Amino acid sequence: MYKLVIFDFDGTLADSAGWMVGELTPLAARFGFRQACATEIETLRGCDTRQILSRLGAPAWQLPFIAQHLRRRVAQDAETIQLFPGAKALLRRLAGQGVVLGLVSSNSAANVQRILGPEAAALIEHYACGAPLFGKAAQFRQVVRRARMKPSDTLCIGDQTGDIEAARQAGLACGAVAWGYARRELLAERSPTWLFETPDDVATRLAA
Image 1 (cartoon, rainbow, N blue to C red):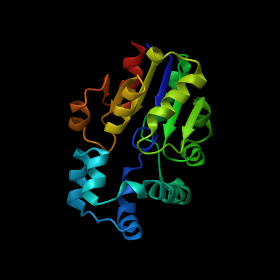
Image 2 (cartoon, helix red, strand yellow):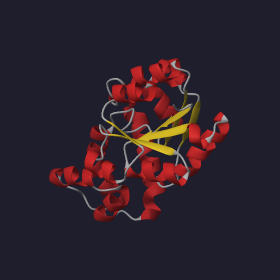
Image 3 (cartoon, rainbow, N blue to C red):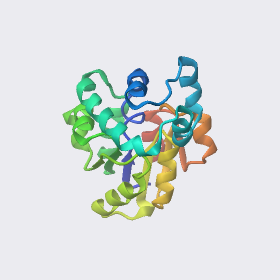
Image 4 (cartoon, one colour):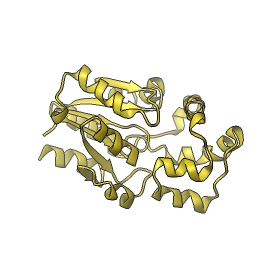
C-alpha cells in the first residue's frame, strides 16, 4: 500500500514519555517556565503541543535551547529508555515486505540509533534527526526526495497532533498511534488517514 513509511521516534517507537515527565521539573527550573503537578501532566495529554507550551508558559524562542538540552540529557540516560513492545517486530515486518523505512525526529541521530539498537537502526534507510519541533514538514519532504518516492506512496506515523499537521503540510498521508503520549481522542479529532491501536495493528493493516 505504501512504499515509504516515515516514523516519528519518541512516543512512537520509543517509550520515552515517562522519562520526559521526570525531566519536566528540572527543565522548568532551568528555563523558568511553570512546573506542572502530576494531575495536570495527565490533563496535558489532551492538549496539542502549542497548547501545552502555552499552559506551561514556555516561550517559543526557548524551544531550540530546550531541545538541545533534552538531547544531551537523553544521551546521558539512553540506556533507561526502551522501545515499545512490538516496535522492533514492526520494523522487521515492514522492511521484510520491501517497504523503505525513514525516521524524522527532534532527537539526535546518535540517541535514536543507540536506543533502537544496531539491528533495528540498520532497518531504517533514511534519517532526518534534530528536526525543529514545528519544522517536521520540511524534514518529511527531504526524506521523500532522498528515497526517490512519490508523496502518494508515503505514510508518516507519529504520536502527536503536530505529526499529523506536518504530514499534511508536506502533502503526505498520516498515521497516528494510540499508544503514545497524546490521548487517542485528541488524535482522532484531527482525522488522520490511519489511527493505529498497537504496533502489530500497523503491520497487519498496511500489509492488507
